[in-house]
Length: 261
Image 1 (cartoon, rainbow, N blue to C red):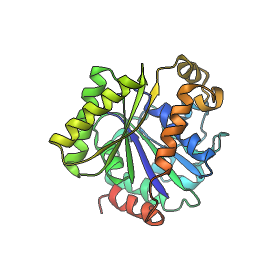
Image 2 (image 1 turned 120 degrees about the vertical axis):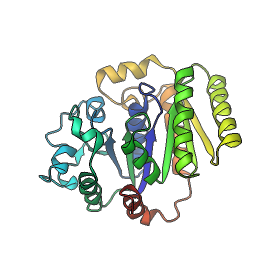
Image 3 (image 1 turned 30 degrees about the horizontal axis):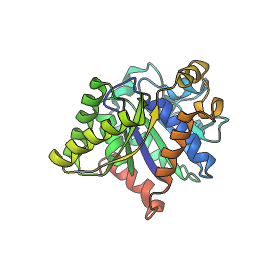
């Protein structure tokens, strides 16, 4: 199982929407995908998908269910582990609770991709997910505050470990605007930080995306022919084209790194 973490320095940049739609694009390419809501205390994936979960990760933390028992089909070709919106204690799990959740991941099998939609910012749980994952996508927009916060999370991640990161620019007015954002962040990363930033594409500003959010339906399902949907598909193909060496052992590696072993 390959682990992919989607994160951002700032909320409101479209991270959750992209997590869902990248997952759908990867699933349509023939991979089995599991979505995990890593924003543990303010869950949004199930809301975006129009799903009301009977069981959430809170039931796992309390020891009442295993992760395998709370996995839900979404109807869009991928499965979901829902978070627990508004349950404050999940926002900062203790070590024993974190280990309960992560050890349960070992019981899940048959998936090619685990996509984790983290919370925004640089909280401890976010950084743990990011540092443990095989691949990390930083989502930003051309807005100056989003760029500043993207720089901040890149700097924080690379201070922990000089791992390669991927950049996806969302809500860009034009391709040229997205390229300028990517060049700026890549230049700063290359010059001042010991790491790499791989630009995997952009998603143009599109009112249809906002309409899909309001409809609680994935953009790739409602608007598959749109330019923005095509750009999401292209970004997903960039991820799939990565060499898959050692993927079979990646879940165990992910779990060990996540719980600090």
